[in-house]
Length: 103
Image (cartoon, rainbow, N blue to C red; front, side, top):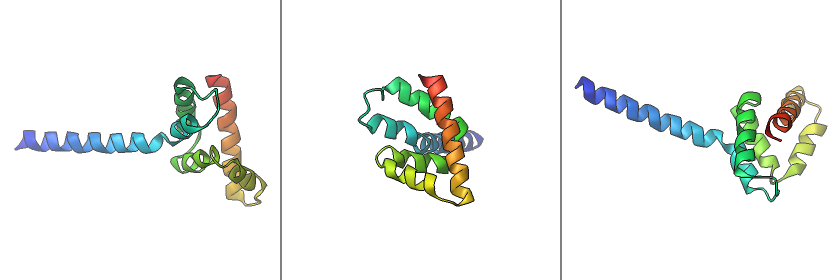
């Protein structure tokens, strides 16, 4: 019985990890789907690793949308709310880090 519970716990944990990893790769998927010639698998993977360090999961979800609609980024940049300003600051930091590490 203990062995069964241990196996069930491990299987559940692995499923949760896999789901989190798939969800967390939003920047990488958006990068790969973009029409930029520099969007190689290695570079997009690197950018995702930087995003994991510099941006929250919620930030990543927002920023991933900017790959297909850059105007959303401009709207956020022009916003006057503290929340949007904070996200813009985190995004700029992320961009600088990604450029330095992934170029």
